[in-house]
Amino acid sequence: MSIEKTITSSTEQNIRSRLIGFFSDVTDLTRFTGRFFKEAIRPSYEFSEVVRQSYLIGYKSFPLVAITGFIIGLVLTIQTRPTLAEFGAESWLPAMVSVSIIREIGPMITALIFAGKVGSGIGAEIASMKVSEQIDAMEVSGMNPFKYIVVTRIMAATLMLPLLVFVADAISMYGSYIGANLKGDVSFRLFFNLVFNTVAFSDVFPAVIKTFFFGFAVGLIGCYKGYTANRGTESVGEAANSAVVIGSLLIFLLDMIAVQFTSIFFP
Amino acid sequence: MKKTTGERVRVGVFVVVSMSLFVACIYFIGQRRQLFASTFRVSGIFNDIGGLQVGNSVRFSGINVGIVSNIDQITDSTVRVEMSINSHTQKYIKKNATAIIGTDGLMGNKLVLVVPGSPNEKVIADNDTLATTRPVSMDEILIKVKETSENAAGITKDLSVIVHNIRMGKGTIGKLFIDSAFAKNLDATLTNIKQGAGGFKQNMDAASHNVFLRGFLKKKKKTEKGN
Image (cartoon, rainbow over all chains, first blue to last red; front, side):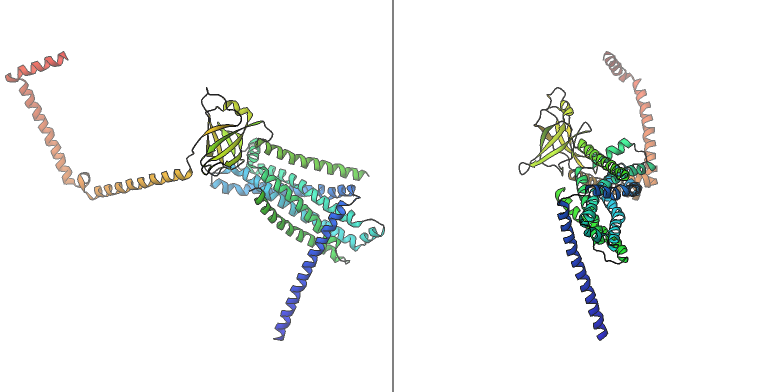
């Protein structure tokens, strides 16, 4: 009886401490987000650092995103073909694949790759800066580490992800064109016409808008996890890991919200 | 310093390329939605638009020439559909052209089909109203199909009864097919008729040489020659 009581009370304590941890994390993250906007608006601006981070975050992610996009377009086309062929609707293949890629698969896959590569990188980098007391050193030397480290990275992530998605979508389409020609014969012009006869503004704009939020979420979580890491060296790995996990989860949550908004504004 | 410049250039190229892709995408979508083309507006009043939506295509001679730009309910049973059509097509659409709501393929999107008018008629003007034709809805087609299939089922049922009766040897045709005695009788009857007809012919030939009938037959031949 007393053992059961002890187990129950320890479970309760565990749940309570987890809940407290979760809500205090939410409060800290909200405060962190507020501080980002405050620091982002207030001069001076670190433009050159934003460009450098854009290079590291955006340009350097391009090969990975391009390969993923190409494979997704190719595979999606090959996988969709048999089902459409059953209905005699193979001519709908470019239209169907393009809408899927532009609306959902392109932004989601790119954002998840981005969270994996960039989110973990930011988390680990800032956490290691904290462990090696570089952030403290910056504060001592009169610099604003939040502005220099956090604001620049979040801004670069927010601006670079949409651009990566444009490129990924275009490369996916090319992959899809190759996929369509593996077992069929579709000219590039016909493929192009079939795609743009189907794709509408209501497919493109919501997809573009949500990628800004995805980029912001990845950058924010990466920076937050790195900036609030403990002093120990193991916290670097923890920061990188949790940045990827929470960043990916946030992408799915934001996508769900985006779908609801899209259905309201573009019925 | 060199490294920073290189990074800047690469970021610049990346931004320009990706933004160009986005702008090109917007342009091509806009081009198909007649966003950058010169257009004129016409409208049509329908009783039932069958799920037509703003943005659906307007098709003339099998070519997409415009889009549905607005749909307004004007009374409890009439809907005004406004169409934005490419100006290049205006000279081919006459005042007596008609608009009909159709479907792109069997399962495709709804669209407005503009049926050409007579060549001698005047060209349609901006903000004109096209005459409309009530489209045959899928429901109506299905009702007709149902009626036809019911009729076909009735006919098939009757045919089945007839075939069954024939197989059972009922009725004249059934007896003919199944009853061999009946068939033999019929055959014998036909042989008798044939023999009877032969005898009758001989009698008639003999009668034509008879003195009493000779005058009558000559008179008949003369009448036939005169005609």
